[in-house]
Length: 304
Ligand code: PGA
Image (cartoon, rainbow, N blue to C red; front, side, top):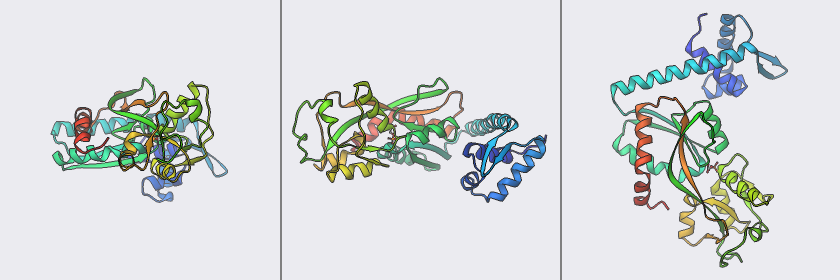
């Protein structure tokens, strides 16, 4: 079989996206260019890799086998290139990370300081919600990812670093704002603004409610912590958010942290990658940097 790495890369993207069009967009190619390469790959394999039913595609048995092999081969090639740059001993070049959206309040500060020491590093940060980060993690699409609620999966290597403190917030003129020791029972009677499902922040709050026998229907679902903060300040409802995301508003007196039983919820932030992954020298250097320096850097940057 004469297969090219490019064909395997395209095939992996089509398989993962379940779509020729989305794979073409992701790889900045045209859809016909992707189709031609997949056709050539199918000719080499001698079997169709996808079944076409209406507009949908489904991987065939041969497709599943080629996907498994593609992941293996592409991972080995990426590990090889990491070993080579390690042999060259230079910290430079791409640093690809996916980071949960809430971590945007501290990751740029860590990266900014790191880049002062290593200006030739080319960072590519993708901010998205937890569900998407987990998907990218499982497909080995990044050097490593940063998230609040790391999945418990023995295939993963997780490195805890900063503390992630989650608190309930209200506008300063809310009747609960001046109360002490508010019960969860009282809190859940309020209107709540929640992140979209797939968000790690939402997952933590939902789990807390569930473990106490409560369930709430969010008054509004909003796709970012920024939008939620604005909603809380506008008096639309209460919310549970990571402290990292609301330091400015708290210090300016625009939001208050409520004193509720069971809060603050203390969690950690984690850097995570697949077990056995060989990190590039650049990724390893940045990972070591955040594990060792994040508290010091964020204190000097005034990030609460
Ligand atoms: P989120 O993730 O930005 O998806 O809410 C935060 C977290 O993982 O704790």
